[in-house]
Image 1 (cartoon, rainbow, N blue to C red):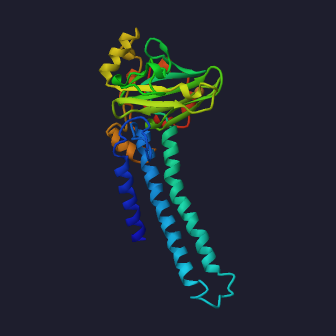
Image 2: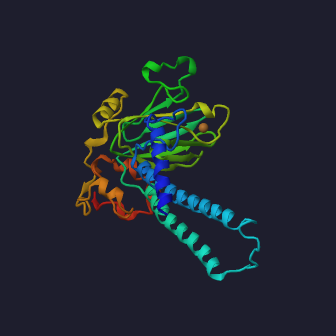
Image 3: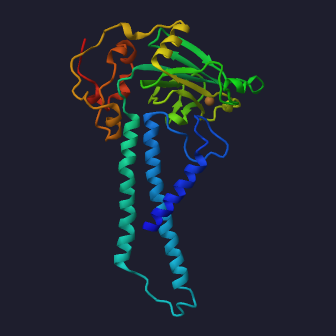
Length: 325
Ligand SMILES: [Cu+2]
């Protein structure tokens, strides 16, 4: 297996070499691999993807070597009198058990990742994204009800000097603070759409009459692009998602500019203790999902905004810190 490891390392080095120019949150020509991770979820997806790739390389190399061996060893010249053997019980057991073990090895981190993606830390803010034919509408219920529509900038109006990108830039980008747990509530007002931002590792169906939830904690400031990912009609390709991740101060300034209010003033939630607070966020995220970080700013979450939709987070009741009202 050392040869296969060496080969997979070389293949990785080659991929990394090709990918180097693609350090942006949008698709690049000739891009290979996933977009660079900009959220904690996407970092885990990258890790899992790379882990699976090692296994794939190992299996592919093993099968290739086996085939080469069989072709050389058992061709008509080298092996003129073939064996009549039709069963080999130990061999059959081995080639059943080993693939099962490989699947188990894949399943454990896979379920761990699914659990991590679906759990809800206490969100610091909520953004509701509504899909329309063919644009997105956004609401900030925690920030004085800011709401706006976000349309794609048409090809003729794209200005590359402003960093605009064809089919991706919008007239009204979503602005979110970095290092905060942002809850996205996703729905649609006419037909099925899907809210997908590859750099964040999120893709969630937008279904009329249903409120889906996902979350993201952005780790790097920047502009991130996504697209509707459910075939929704003739304008499907023309309803991009543009998200600007900024610092907290810049976010507050943007909220003020939009005529909204920051929710921080209300000390409605009194936190008694945070039993697991010593864990740093980075350390806790690297471990198994049950290790839960205490929310960084519980007071920032207005109870009025977070209460009505807590039903979906019922699977992780242990995450809520002890609270009194
Ligand atoms: Cu759509």
